Length: 495
Image 1 (spheres, helix red, strand yellow):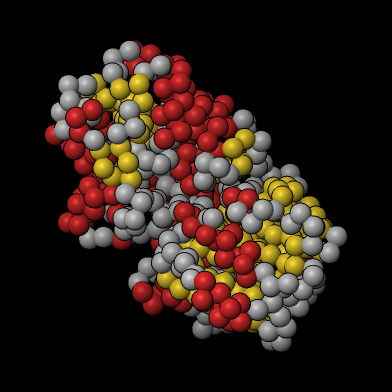
Image 2 (cartoon, rainbow, N blue to C red; image 1 turned 120 degrees about the vertical axis):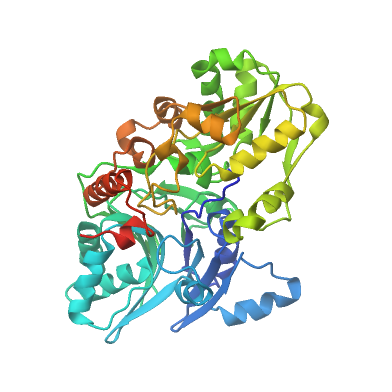
């Protein structure tokens, strides 16, 4: 997807029970997950005192001569790391700097540190609760709401009871890695497990880590032990992880977009690697659109999230997959951070397409999603100019018809082309001969999970949490009646 949504963030935490420095694990764990957040990065370690480093942009490369300086700056056998995109709070420079995670919150003589992935839906309700005790509290970002709530509850009980209350009282997606004031590593998920979070250990079983994706373990040569269950709290110990199921009975609702776009293809979600699921997406195209498929001369893909699906499409149909589209690896600018007049030229520079392969051909273009449609229009126009006879878009993620409340920055109906137009109309708008979306049923089957185990709110209009459902319905009615949305629904909605 060339439109580059602001993604769910990535977290990593580590504790070593031989008192070795965990910074190298944190560093590589974040480097392996930098695709989940380019706006900011942060490290926090503990050796009796908290030590922090935060910065904007990608996790930096560390030169050999700098290693000792970093180890000295971030000592300790326990720590957290975080990469972030903004889906709550401000996006100006000062707000981005202030909201970079991990964060430390204080309550009296208590402290807690967390790195958070997800998004809170009932933000106004929690802010109101906090302001009853802190009248001057000013909301900046979701992570501080979780940490403050943990501390306020913590004065009345232990960590488990505080986390359980958070699970009961906070609506939304939250996969959290944290440290107590004593340097103890813990992690937990919301009761529906909307965002991924897994646990693993070093081969000598003396280092325990938590990671948003399994690639964070792989890059450190750690073994995957388990995916944290929805509503589960885990704490690291010298004997491995202690697991405590705090909340039961809620339906699991893993974000389906993780399979199509967010997660790295070599990460594992459930019982399958993501690339295996994406290959199945491509095979589904042949089954679902046989008439259009019969007209296709060559397949190309939008790198890199379209590549695995293109392979699956090619594998089943035997239509040549012409790998004529390539991403410029070192053009790192993201379309969403540019002024509108700059967007198109940047997209044009990021992807190179070998033109002579397309002349006079009916081209199937495999991509993961269409959100706003503006950049898709640019790609189709470019293919036409290169001599493509017909352009058929095959989109692995079904048509997005509603906003996301759980950590993807597509929060208004106005910005979603799929909320206003059907596939035939979208094809006309972007200049394609056809837009072929994978069906919801095909997506679900490919993941290996049941429909009840996935969050499909943005493509079905049925959300896994009640306030999100209510807000979506209210805002859709207002939008259809001419209401001009002013920003993220969960930050501007009237309760």
